[in-house]
Image (cartoon, rainbow, N blue to C red):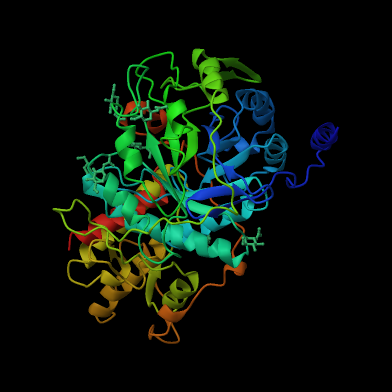
Length: 525
Ligand SMILES: *[C@@H]1O[C@H](CO)[C@@H](O)[C@H](O)[C@H]1NC(C)=O
Ligand SMILES: *[C@@H]1O[C@H](CO)[C@@H](O)[C@H](O)[C@H]1NC(C)=O
Ligand SMILES: *[C@@H]1O[C@H](CO)[C@@H](O)[C@H](O)[C@H]1NC(C)=O
Ligand SMILES: *[C@@H]1O[C@H](CO)[C@@H](O)[C@H](O)[C@H]1NC(C)=O
Ligand SMILES: *[C@@H]1O[C@H](CO)[C@@H](O)[C@H](O)[C@H]1NC(C)=O
Ligand SMILES: *[C@@H]1O[C@H](CO)[C@@H](O)[C@H](O)[C@H]1NC(C)=O
Ligand SMILES: *[C@@H]1O[C@H](CO)[C@@H](O)[C@H](O)[C@H]1NC(C)=O
C-alpha cells in the first residue's frame, strides 16, 4: 500500500528525497544496517546504461525513463545495491533515487568523470576538481540510500603511474573532510584495478596514515575467476582474500565477473558470499547491468525496452542461492589493524609519498592572483575543443619557455618527493599567470615582456607581497553553484573486461589535459 502511494507521488512529480531505507554505517571492517544492527553485504550490480543518444551528459540517475525501464529488472535480480560510474551534480535525481530507495536499493557513486578526474600519467589536483567533487556530494548526499562515494577508479594501474595515487588520496581526504563538515555519514573509498605487481602497495597506501586521510573502505575490480573449472584457489581469489585478513576497513569487489567463457554462470558468487570470504569481504558488484560491445551485460536495452541476456538468469540464480551470514553490530568488536605506508622507491615499485598534496583553496589562489602584475587576458578556460587545444598549446609553451630560467616549483608538485608548491592546486589560468609574472619581473617589467603573443596583459596591484596567501582557507559553505559539464564514460575495468568505455570518451581536450601539458612542461626543467 505504502509502495503504491509512493509511486503515485513519483508519477505526480511529488517525490521528495528518499526516506524509507535504513541507513548503513561502518564499524570496523563491516557495514551494518543501523536499524536492525545486522551486517550488510553488498549484492550489487554495476549500473551505467549508455544514454548518449538521449543526452549530452551521461547521467543515468537523471534519466527517469531509463530508471523506470530498469527498476523491475533490478528488483527481479534481487540486488540490494548499484554502483554508478558517471553522474553529474546538476541533474535532477529525485525520481530515480526515490524509486531505488523504495525498492531497497543502495547506491555507491563514483565522484570522477572522464573530464573531471586525476590523470594517471600526469597527475595534479586543483580547486576545480575539488569544487566539482563537492558539488557532487551536495547533489547526492541528501538521498539516504547513497551509502558510499568512490574517490577514484583504477587511477594507478601500472608500475609507472603509482605517483598518481597521492593525488587521488588527497582528493579522498578532502571529500571526507567536506562530508564531515556537513555532518553526514557517507563513506568514501577507492576502487582499484587488479595488477599483481602493485596490489599490495596500493592496498596499504590507501589504508595508511591518519584516519582522516585513508580510505573508509577499499574496492577491488577482480576478473580472475573464469568459468566453472576454476576454483577459489586456482582462480587466485584465495591469495587476494588472504592479503585482507584482519583488515581494518570494509573490503568489497567493486567489479567482478570474468567473461572469457560465455554465457557466464558466476561460480565465484558462492565464494564471495560464503565463509571463505565473508570474514573480510562485504560482497560486491557484478560487472555490469547493461549489455555493451564488451559483452558483460545482464540486460540489453533499447529505448524503453530491456531484454535479458543469457547471463541474466544465471546471475539471478547464483545470487539467490547464497545467504551470507554475518555478525551483529553489537556483538562485533573490531580487531583489524591499520597498515603502514609502503616504502617509496623504484625497487619497491611505489613512487607515491605518504605526504599528500595540500587541500586546494580558492582563497589562496585569488589572493595570489591579486599580487600578480602580468596575467592572462582570458578569465575562463575555453570550452570548445578547438579553442581548448590552442589554449593548451599556448599555456604549455609559456611553461616551457619561462620555467627553463625561472623556478616554477611554486606551481608544480612532485608526489615522489612529497613536495608540492604552495600554488600547485590553483587552476591552469592562475598558474600560468603566476609563471608569466615571474618572467615579467625577471625582465624588470620592460615593455613587451608581458605579452606572450597577445595572451597576457599587465595589471596594477596594491601589493606584490603574497606571503599571507598560503594561510587563506576556503569556507566550504561559500561554494559556487556553477558546474562544468562533461561527456564520455567514466567507467574502466581491468584488462579482461576490454571495456568499450575508452573508445566512447569524447575526444575533446579537457582541463585536465591542459593541466597535464603544464605539468609535463614544468617537469622538463
Ligand atoms: C607509462 O607507460 C605507458 C605505456 O608505455 C605510457 O603511455 C605512459 O605515459 C607512462 N606513464 C608515465 C607516468 O610515465
Ligand atoms: C573554486 O572556484 C571555482 C570558480 O568559481 C569553482 O568552480 C570551484 O568549484 C571552486 N573550488 C572550490 C574548492 O571551492
Ligand atoms: C553519523 O553517525 C554517528 C555515529 O554513528 C551518529 O551519531 C550520527 O547521528 C550520524 N549522522 C547522520 C547524519 O546520520
Ligand atoms: C584474465 O583471464 C585469464 C583466464 O582466461 C586469467 O588467467 C587472468 O588471471 C585474468 N586476468 C585478470 C587481470 O583478471
Ligand atoms: C599479498 O601480499 C604480498 C606482500 O605481503 C605481495 O607480495 C603479494 O603479491 C600479495 N598477493 C596478492 C594476491 O595480492
Ligand atoms: C573455500 O575454500 C576451500 C579451500 O580452498 C575450497 O575447497 C572451497 O571450495 C571454497 N569454497 C567455495 C565456495 O569456493
Ligand atoms: C581505461 O583503461 C585503459 C587502459 O589502461 C586506458 O587506456 C583508458 O584511457 C582508460 N579509460 C578511462 C575512461 O579511464
